[in-house]
Length: 291
Length: 335
Image (tube, rainbow over all chains, first blue to last red; front, side):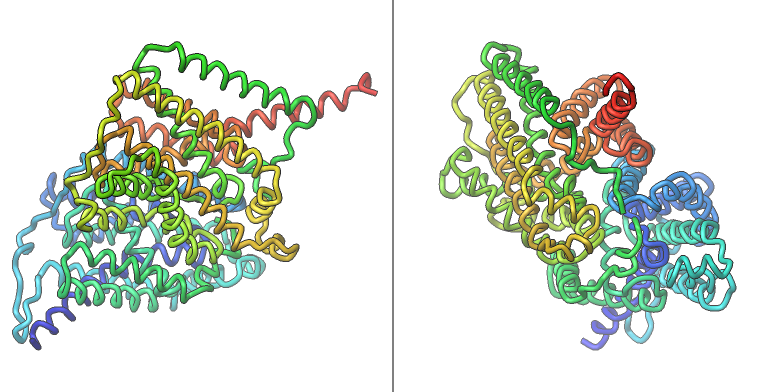
């Protein structure tokens, strides 16, 4: 019994860490820039396939892909920002939503063209290994993915808290025009911020791909998870997002222990509805500004 | 903030407006005549599908086009309606032609369940939740005992010839399309229409001048879901076999958004233009491309429209007319 609880806790924490990085990019882009990035999970899917391709073609370990994905997706994010977001930033929110929806569909169909709708897994040497700590069985791959996620979140937290650029980004999130008037280059920082959000999605995709099977047309499930984490944790706050990810992970593993696997999703959707009813103020940062 | 993506309803006035209406009535008469004399199965069935999507897109248009609250999951409500009528047939032997209103009610209830928490909030909650909820409903349908999971539900054939069936649904969906278009036309000119446009343009201001924003959004969403449910119920009879993945297909959600955005969201003519354009182009492209390439092309079109052509085809027409009017007014002979 005790070991069962222990394994539920351990599993929940490891999975929760991965959910947290799936959500952190969405949360920051939404909280600081007010951009509702519905294409977030499409970038997560691309991240998984990035690791998949590197592993298949060059035998590159996903751990290395995790770090490689960050700069690659950062660049992609900046490009998307320059091409898309700058044009819809000052327009109505609906216009930006439609553009991002189009981007999501585009990425998903390109993914389907390149990799079909088959479900893929990345099987490396340590995929099916595990270690036993005090009677609790820990899958190595979840431990590694969880540790990478924690590392990324820690780095993000430190970046936003201690560096000048991180402070400027937070200032921009609090009051855009005030930040501009004290000399923050808002346009450039927005591009960096959006790029960082997408970079997080890419790296999260690698971590998810290590642990879960994935396919291009199920990417929207990850949007559901990321959105749940964002709503639970609030916007633009890395520490809260981490906590929310852990809560979601723990609820998922606890629910999975008592009911058939499919119903776990439903528990989380009910949770989503409950939070939406209770947390009325919700996406406050996003309502004040466009898209 | 002035949203230029969606159109206001202050279009052309006086006789010009009636020319537009007369044009669409002439199209309607021509389509009725074709339905009576046409014998090509392919044309009848393709046009029937076009009409079905016109109804769905018009329904989307009410809250999405006029109100600016985008529903990215029309398939949820469409599928709820389809399954409602299929279950009523399977267990009680009731024909979907009779139970279509009940299917609409079931979908409207689903719409309220999703709309009540999300539409109370501003911003993108509604769009995000409608986008991700289809999967939850799919899981539910796969696992509930009375929906028969992945096995699906068979409907009873109508006993008509294939041509007769297609003709029946041709007229059913044509009639519904005309009815719903008239409804949207009426809404556009009613207090509800103005309230929705006010919500889209500036929700705070709308609330200050006394618009009951939340209630208006709930009602608009319930109407839209009801219509989608009715269409779904009839679709169940047309397709004869329901299974979760085809009925709650993302394609349906995607198509409605595509058609509305390309035709022009927030104008009653938008779906009338968007649905045939998207479906006929898709059918033509399907000969040479796979459906994924097709989708990729349409998604690029949507991005381009969102960025550069606010209001879709109707937006272009409006701007062209307005420019012409300005030129006419500027000419000295006018006085």
